[in-house]
Figure (cartoon, rainbow, N blue to C red):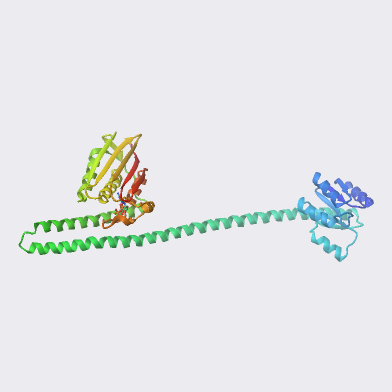
Length: 391
Ligand code: ADP
């Protein structure tokens, strides 16, 4: 048998006493008898009951129904109404507060017990239902969040695909354009060479000039193709770090020789090496790309008879290299895009280029786990600084 802590709210003393006796006989504990709604709420604040027997017609500000509304809101315990009348109006009023049960006075003990058990049963079921409902809501919330997350991922993937699509068409456009100029040059130089070779007068100078033009154009095309192939690999994450031990002097001499051979500008490259060991361990292919591109740019964007300072020093297992030129510089506004693919500053004039070199440098430095910074002023020159960890 259920034994509950019950609060009686009843303004008629005799009825309250009778009810108390009847409930105690059934092993319930009466935690208080309140004559008004206010008193009932005070008792509940001090020691909440497990069930409230509530007379509907109470004297005072709060009647039974209003008191029940407050109890429902604050304490969440079942309330059994006590009422003397079972007319339609009273029943409607009662129904509005969702009582657990109600007892019509006068009542007998059997009926009272039945109603209490019914109230507790209803309350239990309601709480179970509420719990299920909460769980269901939580599940729906979780699923909605998962769905939103999946949606976001999908959007991101689509966005990436769109970006890749745009980049691909940009590459095709730029590469086609990059092919056109040297191809026209190759064609006209080759035609002129044919004409000169047919004629019988001394065309040695012109033959030299045009064969050099052909050589340069083919080299440009080759560089362009190398860059495109590099990005194909980079986008597929296939640029790996493959370290090997190499002779530093031989390596840097080769880079400088190639840079000089590829540029016919009269620009001096001065080198300073400080604390650089005879051999170093790193990925020479990646290092080659970094220094070849940076030194070529320094020469290419220098004025005639300009100077390029190339300094390398090693400290605390970090190789710090600076490539400084006194050339055209990079306008400040454009410097943030310097490492973007196909970027070329507005002040390059007729100097040829694909706008791919620095983005290749950036990628290589990334794979080498290094960093690159630049300081430049339009018209004054640029200094690129590369820091690369070495073994
Ligand atoms: P490009 O083939 O055009 O030289 P890069 O990617 O190597 O392509 O360089 C991108 C742009 O950055 C160049 O077009 C040029 O505007 C600018 N730039 C790079 N290096 C220098 C430099 N040393 N001096 C001036 N401008 C430079």
